[in-house]
Amino acid sequence: MKKQSIAYALVAAAAVCGTGAAQAQVAGDIMVKVGWNKIMPKVKSDDLTAPSLPGSKIDIKSASALFFTATYMITDDISVEALGGLPYKHDIVGAGAVAGVGKIGSVHQISPTVLLQYRFLAPDAPFRPYIGAGPTFAKFYGTKGSAALTAVTNPGGPPTTIGGDTEWGGTVQVGGNFKIDKHWFIDAAVLKTFISTKATLSTGQTTSAKLNPVAVNASIGYTF
Amino acid sequence: MKKFQILTTAVAALAFLAGCGGNEAGDQSPRFAFTQMVNFGDSLSDVGSYAVGAVALQGGGYFSINGAGATGLLNTNWTEFLAAQLQLAKPCAAETGLNTIQAIVNVPPVPAVFHDTGATACLNYAQGGARVTNPVGPGNALLVTAGVPSTYGNALGALTVPVHDQIQNYLTHVSATFSPSALVTVLAGANDVFINIATVEAQIAGGVPAATAIGGAVTAMTTAADQLAADINTNILGKGATHVVVINVPDISVTPSAIASGASGQALTKQLVQAYNDELAAKLTPSASLLYIDSFKAIEDEVANPAQYGLSNVDTAACTSSSSLVCTKATLIAAVTPTPLTNPATAANTYLFADSVHPTPYGYRLLAELVGEQLAIKGWL
Image (cartoon, rainbow over all chains, first blue to last red; front, side):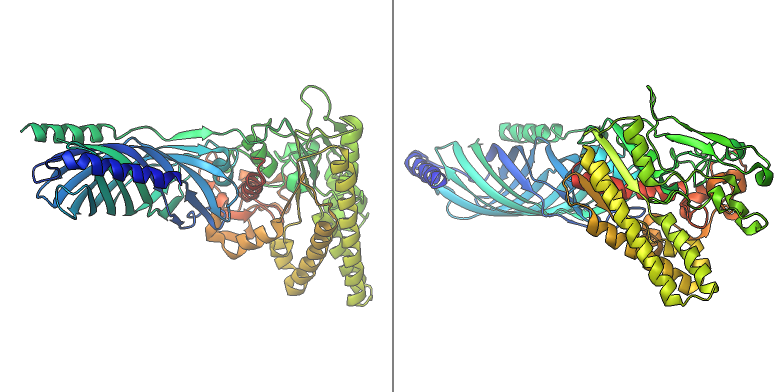
């Protein structure tokens, strides 16, 4: 398994490099990470509000982007992490009665999150798992409509556009990091965010959806 | 603290990366690039076959609320909404004319003329009153009986060229085959229902047992469906068309006209429409080139759940004229007449029916939305 061999390599690297390191992740440390994050919305959409064809729902596809974090160690075990990154671009597809229409639009989003984290094991352990929780602010913007969206909302009329939205949600996180050396480490985490959004079409209808995405990410970090 | 500078810089960078951007229309071109639309059918697809002579004098031509933008919408007929959505030219009537009986209507007839050739060919062959194969449909001057004023509504002289002949006219005048990039639509059968109901009523009044009369009408409807299916299979799909939309007959038992005929009239109407639709669906050759759209169920749902569609009235005609062919903003019922008359009649957009059987422009838009939805699911839009 390729993934497994990568994991072994990381563990080996952490073990080898870790022996020489004096300390890591103690109170007052600041860590930054950069990596790749994939957001997979688990959408439960309400019907598009009237006037509309009955049962028109939406689904939102996964998207990936570069992400960054900055973490401050408050104590040797407790940290606070700010998570942000490049915008994600999600495809919006039809669901419910309009399942099968395919892509009806797209939306950009950024969802900066602040997490209060607890890190297990000793500060100098080669591998430190952690859990976190905190608020997420999501901004949905830069939407694009489509011929299909216009066809079912205002056929032959001016193109229907999708309004943006801003929402607050909550995120929980489970992750861990492997120490490479005194400064460098590798990190992976899974995040679950509880968040809803309500988009308003230029034709007046709204569509509300629970997004509740799961995100997985891998990153490389540096401790100052 | 240097570490705090790093932290604040990092957080500022994160915030900075928060994007911004407007909400755009996106790609509005359909997934399949249609080059033309050809329509066959009856009044529900008619875009002005009779917008001449006596009808033109009254500002009519559509079987709906007439006048560009009369209700504030950009189009009137569903074929127009759809053409605009598919980025095609506005459809226009392939044949115009009126066999008006001047002695009754006091306006001369207008000879039938075709407009389906040349640079700006009009390829909407649908005509109000058209049946599947029978040349005499509602509104045809041949239905006028001298001395019987109740038949004089037909004196306007609708051409009622049947769908079979409409298709032949295209094949003869325009091209012996259909273009694979043409969208061909067929919506017909309602006039066969109306004529057969009239026949049943006349037979029962003449002493024929109801069961016999109704049985004959059901047979006539399935025969008409067989004929339309054969025409679509042989003369449309069999002549090169690869994008064919067939819309079944809406449930006209929910129209104000059927409601006025009472429960038994509604039941008979529904029975005949269902017999026709079932037979049509069964006899059409299944094909990737064919998209069958169920407008029967759609209109039932519109009537059952009007609010879902933005409708407030689904059983009253918005027009005061008995036929919406000559209905304009000036001939609307008080509830939807705009004040002043120069304003669009936006209140009419909450009414489903313009007259006792035909939709308002908004009602037609709902049909266009259904067709658009189904085209998108099919991958053609």
